[in-house]
Length: 156
Image 1 (cartoon, rainbow, N blue to C red):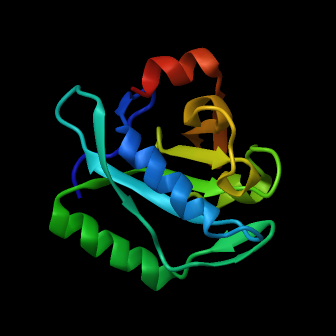
Image 2 (cartoon, helix red, strand yellow):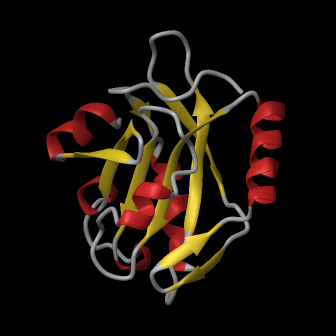
């Protein structure tokens, strides 16, 4: 796996990535859904998100679970594609916020890992970045909520 997220990192996210993400989340109108954003980062450059990867998962209206073997499948894919996991994205049935379960179940332990929560099972009426809540892993299940200004500065 290539270099992973860094605290305060920036991200280039094409509109096709957010569109694929919303389409995926909307396929689950009664349960949470999850996907990952993969890409590459050069030295000191923004991470370039280039793939939405959908793991096999089980879900309820208020949670999702990914089997450990599925995470091994993701690691194999990352190694073969020479990409890194930068962002986890999941939906909530109502408002977008980071629950305690979300705090504890990050797909990556690396500082700077990003978690995006999409409200209303992906049925949003404004732009993607205006609708979602974004969190950055500070370590030890501690997350920083990114405000509107930080989202604009860090996600292009």
